Amino acid sequence: MRGQYGAPCSQELKRKVLEACYQPDDVLVMGFTAEERDRYERFKNLFPDALAPLIEHGLDKSDCLAMVERAGIEIPAMYRLGYENANCIGCVKGGEGYWNKIRRDFPDQFEELAQVQDEIGPGAYLFYNRKTGERFSLRDLDPNAGRHNEPVPECSFFCQMAEQEYDRGREDE
Image: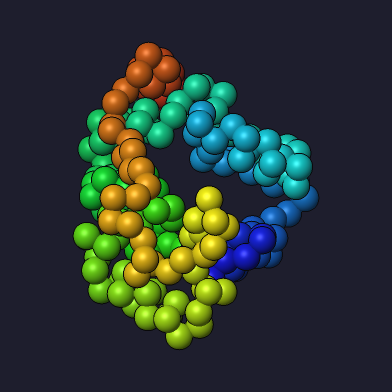
């Protein structure tokens, strides 16, 4: 499901694809937002020349969602449903709040993973009790546990500046 190096899907669908396509003279432009600066810094350990223009412009996820909406582009379904990320439904990287929302919005996917956990046992459990250190299954997840702070599309000052810069660039074409 996921291990000390993250979920295998990230390795297969992101890292291996990048490694297969990457050329030494490529410039990687990443979509890390302002709240992902730490993640970007870790990424730069592998690709020191990678750029993150959203971070450079101080844009967070709500800015980006607002800009996409204002451009007349429909935001991905998972964001419209109030999820923090547009991951696969039932992403093993999700936290307790995410899984409680999946339980409500997508009960079949919740039950499918719960059944896999039943078959495999504790090694497949995603969560652990911080007090006891004991792992527990989705079936034992407190329905009120976790947090879920969905980003609300909202264009901040930095967002407005970035849009103006973008509009100036289009006028120059």
